[in-house]
Image (cartoon, rainbow, N blue to C red; front, side, top):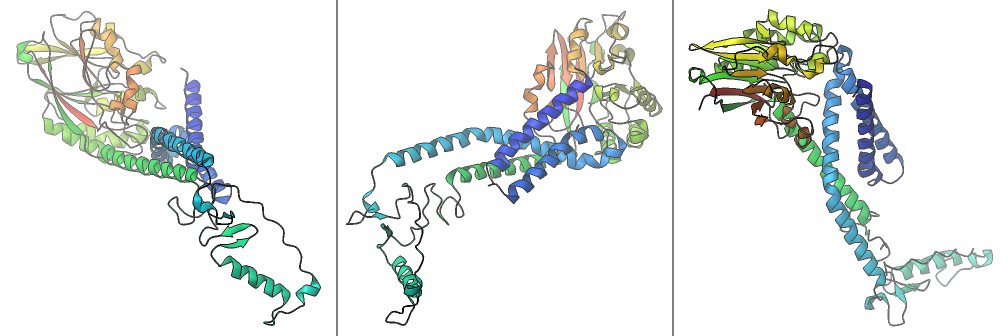
Length: 477
């Protein structure tokens, strides 16, 4: 898919989601008027903010949009999710309401709906209210007459009507008036009744209840997700058995970190914290498996400086992810920057890790994002001609690259890219593209470990997929 096609798809999806949000949060919960217009234009502004943020946040001039824009994208997403879930109980409630109304319309008039003379009372809420009749004009000669109390004809008539309306069972216009029943409505909306303020129908009550529930659920979920995303990553200890592994290499430990996504929302402290946590693991090898940055060296170089303090017995290694190819100047400037920080890039190449008299091949391939620019993965260059009796660990950003790695007899591939879904339920969609979402899996005989990543992309939100640094130990049994 081309960039233009992808952008068009995103804009189309955002437009449809916002239209759905308008129908459920505004159209069905408000009446025509000023409030509806204000809320509609506010939602239109947010609909424009979402795609603008996705584009502008990649440029330095648009960094100020990152927090409000990405926060709204997260809220928008979970509003959509909760409203879709609530469609079922909402539909059931409306069906029950319709059934109740139809049953009420088909019932005979209850005994208390008429008096002894057969006159209708105002409790007949299910019956149409008779049209109001115009009041005849008061004749001047009658208006000037006075009654026994000295009141004019006009005043006397008004007084009698007011007096009559206050008496229980008084007949006015052929209808028996009962106190407190005058405001009964056909739709069941009684002032101060169980369905809310005066004039609120049952349908409006259901719509507003669903909107409030979705709003509370979305804000609560996003708040939890922000706290998780900005908190310390989880240390995941993992042991992987490689049957062909030389026993002398058993116990070799890798600190695996991916998808750090240094960018406008992370700051320098993000990298400092990761370096501090990785160093505390005292790993033999540090593997940075792509998607380190979301910008150029000029914009984000200062945020990466703490990486120079990474410590391990056999060094730190890096392979590109798809986001390195999205930066304005491409991945090469970051490759050189990382060399200067003491991290060795593995661009379609391999190195030997000598440990306790045995050797492990550690290889790395470029990400699939480099295919368009002619800098994609080259498995033959990285893995061809090697000693097949040795075990091989491959660094490749995307789990799907294991399909090719398996043809070269790779024992273990370390990957990232998926973020573990980052925000549930995205984890249910990822298997359509990647063979492993997170954790340890297998592709055509090659074991694949997929880390959830230590950062976030887009919204600073993680739900159901906390950030991770993996301490992976390889063993022969």
